[in-house]
Image (tube, rainbow, N blue to C red; front, side):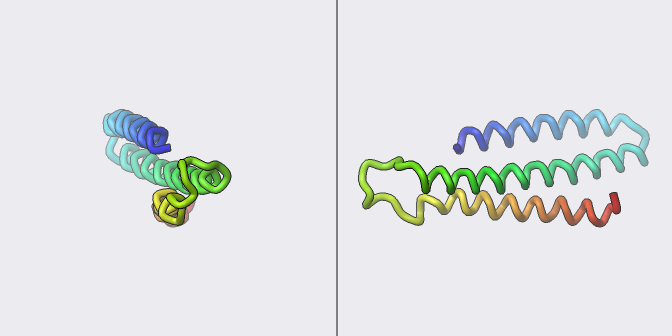
Length: 104
């Protein structure tokens, strides 16, 4: 799960960086609008991905046994997934707030 998360984040960074470079070549007003929209959409998409990825991770941990003994399982196994979901909600909230303020 961690490897998939890292791959998604790296891919998102590369795509965001390339689009930002492309938009910086436009005139100033259009560039600012497109970069702002790109930032908003990136936050929404990454927030949704992190939130649902965390939920899926929690579901997987609840339905599959990953450890040799039951004594090693516990709430601490779910903490990274919960943190990822909470971060996803925070990022999603920031993107939605930006979307609502833009009036689109």
